[in-house]
Image 1 (cartoon, rainbow, N blue to C red):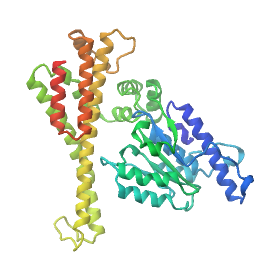
Image 2: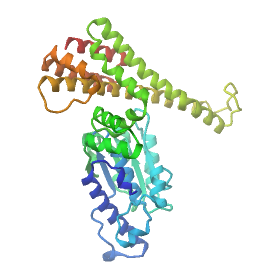
Image 3: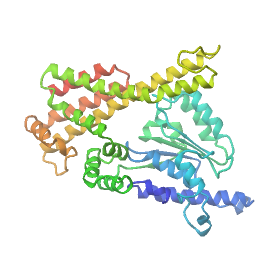
Image 4: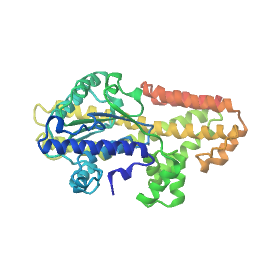
Length: 406
């Protein structure tokens, strides 16, 4: 299986990346053979910095990782004119599973990426490949760079080492600093069709066709969310709870109760992550710092700062998890009212939440299209409030009261 097979509905992007990988391979091969000056291939389709953009679920990180694997491909088929990215060689395999020595894949479970972490990346980018063909830095959350971190990154992107490639991912061009995006080649991914996502779920994950179609339709082509919805019963139950919210905001008491339940569910998700990850991280750090076995044992002198840094990081991760869970709930809620609006205006576009058809038609018949638009706007306003660090319960309560008012 070629590395490009994981890209769903992105034929134009695949073609562009394949051409760049082929030229990059020719460039490295020429250098290895000792060619100089005019003897070197132009490799015009390859560049040192790429910006992958696209809506959530379009496969930005998947495309970047596939390209990284193709750049490290060592398949002998290359010598016969094949496109790098066979998916089977050591270079492809280790890149895809995240263990290649010359591929640094950076994703964050925090709210932002700071200056210190970015400086570490820049130092890594200045190194020559230790065994692979390129030094690749893949930053999956480039939109989370702080302004200071972006300024640190700018110099490295502007003047890269000869065989270093930066792969940056962000939801849109506007999410990247103007100075950085102007130095990158832009690749815009689109949302895959519902049919394409359903096909992937059936073919790769063995999902029942009916469930695959329901999950793909419900998430409107978001590959990651569709897979989670199809494989996680708890995720389906949580989504069903969210879709009942529009029927529970008939009075103020119902609004406040629904808001509390949404926030509590997000908090529970954050606690579950803490149970699964935090304890293991803490014990590993204690052991690395030389503490005796057991949670109550004394820490060696001078290690309090390291333990505090870990606790702060875990707290920020908990906040990010809660915010992300709430955001998914709000997206599902906006999708519900989008279906209501589609019914009200007689759109020929099929509704996404077929399991909630009765509730959708009930609300559609008892309100007007302008009410639905205002409700969608209140959900978007809640998402923006959460991004500005408004207290989650206050933001969600304000939203549910707006849903009631319409």
